[in-house]
Amino acid sequence: MSTRPKPLVAGNWKMNGLKAALSEVSAIRDAAAAGEAGRAELAICPPATLIAAVADICKGSSVATGAQDCHARESGAHTGDLSATMLKDAGAAYVIVGHSERRTDHHETSEMVRAKAEAAIAAGLTAILCVGESQRQREAGETLTVVGEQIEKSWPKGASPDSLVIAYEPIWAIGTGLTPTPADVAEVHAFLRREVERLLGGQGTGVRLLYGGSVKPSNARELMAVPHVDGALVGGASLTAKDFMGIAAAYKA
Ligand code: PEP
Image (cartoon, rainbow, N blue to C red; front, side, top):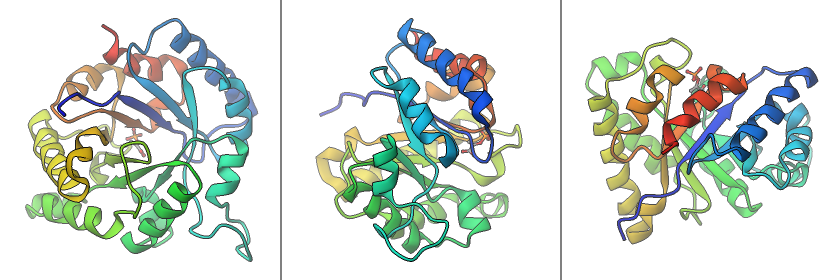
């Protein structure tokens, strides 16, 4: 099977957004309904405080709601944490796991990320699993080794094209305005496709491979045209409907 998967453009709001920001979500929903995202599926991953409200606004639309992290357990004595089941109950369809900011700020290992991805899948969510190298690792020529090891160690049981999305996010490109060249992205994504096919067999063709790191309306078209790039994970530029839809427009015919 060689059909390309339906692209996904997902916005990661990180620790940004109060209730006032929900007007941006309504604007994204309306723009998507007007066909401005073309054939791409959209998802917004707000802070946990806004998940239910975003899901409410997007109900019945082509815009999905996501979360930015989940706990590996379903319930219990874990003060301040949220389980995948709770996120699903609040209206989420996606959850990001293994974002580099969580790997760094919360010392999350690939083994922990794997447990989170498995919890997400068990709860009926689609996990967006992030991988990516640091500047030092890129300069040392270690990118494929690092990304390959992250995939191997965080690969969840039960993965399928419906339950798993991979996001390649070079750490040095996140929030910096720097991006790899299209040729560099092509090399990593071709490698990821081979790895996913090795782990999932024929089904690997259908797993969406997103690029993330300083995607903007001005570079989206070029990055989204790279072979095996099936969409974007967007941070800063997902906070306004104008920029987010400017990126999604890369998929407009
Ligand atoms: C991210 O953190 O997932 C991200 C891609 O951020 P930015 O688009 O701001 O670089």
